[in-house]
Amino acid sequence: MKTQLIAVLVLLTSLSTARADNKRAWDNDNNPSKMGYDYISRTYQYDNSFEALPLEGSLTKAPWSGDYWPTYKGGITFRWNSQKSTNENIAYELTDVTNIKSLDELSKLSPSEKYDLFLGRTDFPLTKYERERTNVLKTIPGTDSYDSSYKIPTWEGLCHAWAPATILFDSPSPVVVKGQNGMEIPFGASDIKALLTYHLHHNKAQTQFLGGRCNVDLADLKRQLQRGEITQAAYDRVAEQGACEDTNAGAFHIVLANQIALKNQGFIADVTRDLEVWNQAVHSYSTRVLSEKMGASSKAAPGTVKEITVLTKMHYTVEIQHSYDETSAYDSTHTKNYKYTLELDKNGRIIGGEWISEDRPDFLWKQDLPKWDGFFAPLEEIYKASVSQ
Image (cartoon, rainbow, N blue to C red; front, side, top):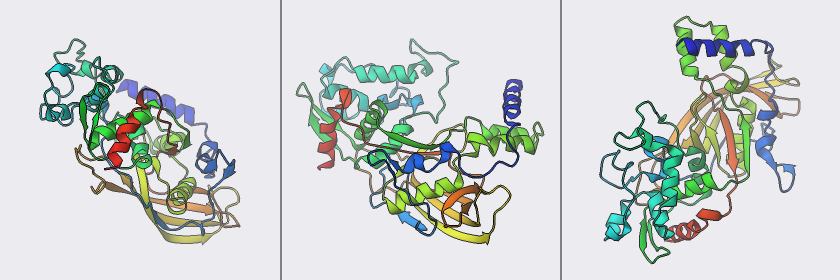
């Protein structure tokens, strides 16, 4: 506890010099051009006019759902389709393929094992690499690398790749494909989703990012406030400034309405405000105007002549249980309710905003589809077979 308090006090001291009259115009990290700029045409493709932005919108093709392949389960080495215990589905011996007799036995292997076998790699390079990346065997009693002091946070995983995969790819169906050595490999829907996720994790593509990540545990900071260990002003200096103030409310509204309603393109939001990161694919929203007033509040962006208070419901895709079958019809939607003020200039354009609700997205981003390249180039064959069913 003492160490935590010292760290918090250092952080508060570093922030104490911030201007008390901090303006609510967006800074460079929160400028909507971060998301709305097209690098091919070299033009800004968002409309910032409040009247031009629909108050509701929904993607014509909703993102599919699946798993974020948590690190504490070994990522995509987890044998999700096996009926054994969790530890047995993590710390298994790598398969001797000569002992595999049926498609049913093969179907119980992990996504990484199946892909290794599809490539004819009985040395299981992907499975070994993923175990090393996650360090999962350090958490399993009885393994050579077990370390009782080693812990993996349950929220860590591949959501940074799973979330865009749900937008960029069609929902896969199960498929049986013949591997390099002639072996038929059964891939369930969750297997293919795992491999598409890893394809995005491994093969980088153009990414556009708005906002900054808050690396403070605000829940712990609030507990310190409730215990009287810090003041409300000290809490606010962390929670309401810098990266922990989160995405500018005006910029958030511009991105949301342009991406979903005007461009019919999904994007990703970190829906947790502080230290933990939960990337989720946003697919629809609705906004209700609560009030309007002329003039500008003391912290409004320079040039503000009108402020509009709104309540927005943002709908996004969350994780579901693994499935061998295709899952596009599964209900996997959660909703966040955000209340904020939009600041408009004399031309009706949004130039800033201020959060009213304590809950808010940490950052927003989107990415292009990478090429089928390198180790995952053969995955294209599996994916195309799965969506052609």
